Length: 224
Image (cartoon, rainbow, N blue to C red):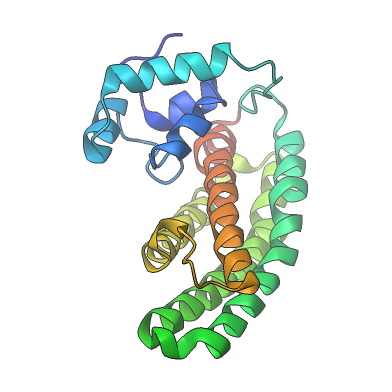
């Protein structure tokens, strides 16, 4: 396993897909923050570099899962994977999460009005941004890449990556508002389901953005 302290987090995630599980466990940003060296990411999250390397090696050695190297697959195949694995579920999950956030606000809002309102407002904003973002990708960027015009897609790619950063910021806000998704003892079934759903959304979006920022966009621009 050729990973060093200077290896970029995003590059590690590309070359060793199972490493993303380790990064997720330790809160290391491998999508929007994929350009940082591993030693910098460890310092920020106060994780020992050698321990993290051993954990990544153990994760890879202990898994029998056949992980696709999307940096080695044709770009149309990668786009189909993004549409099926991430876009399609998001279009169903975002309205569900917004509905649950509204219900929790209505029923439990008086217990912590500012925080509950903040959670609903952030879910609402994230839903709106992601829905518009996916339309731009599906109607503009993805067709350009499939048509072999990726090298001319610098402008839309810059916009998409800026919007990825904005979505990442909203995810961080939600994690803070939801106390790292530790479910309160007094939470009802809907409240618990909202916390679980938002945590799952965060994991899926990190994977989703990683595939686009660190693989799809880079390969499209370099015509690989």
